Length: 256
Image 1: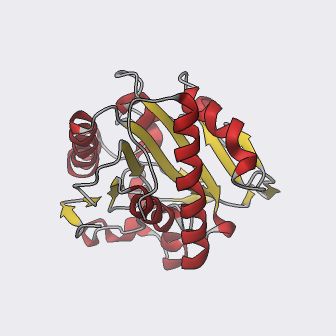
Image 2 (image 1 turned 135 degrees about the vertical axis):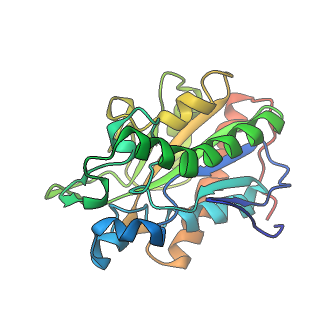
């Protein structure tokens, strides 16, 4: 894999990758710029799942290596700007995340919201647009993680295969899941398009008719580097199998 290339608030990994897969990790980092004074949050909250998707970047990096794919990841916390939300969405800069209040996001003015959008979202959006445009028959895959407990309720799903109105890749992955994993795999769980989580797919995949899927992994399964690598290896081979089942134009194969 080639050396990482950092562009402002965006990390582009393996920019010369030859795969048709374009990997996206919107919640890769819990970094909050010093100028925002930690958004008024204590350290525990800044390190929690409210601020990022623990393990998602490690899994994404492994998939990128296995597939020789480009990976685009946000370098800032989703509490600063959630790159999987449009600027018009209130939770693009949330004032509350589950049970955590975010004081630095209270009563943001339209000017402050626009400044955040231009500084953190637009570079990310532009990087994805440019990569999709230059990839032949791109296949867009976004990688996330979720908590085992939400609002006090245990989640039994282990891997969610999410989609918006284009179900092709999600269908193929669900149809081939048991050949790759014994995890509990469900469609549009623990979230779905009605929860507003498919913005990246709507923005970058649906208009061009590109194959796409959003993957959610329960974060207790990817706490260590070894777990992240094992999950990444499994998902890479699963994607190859699913894309082959569709007979897609784009080339996706394991190279490492």
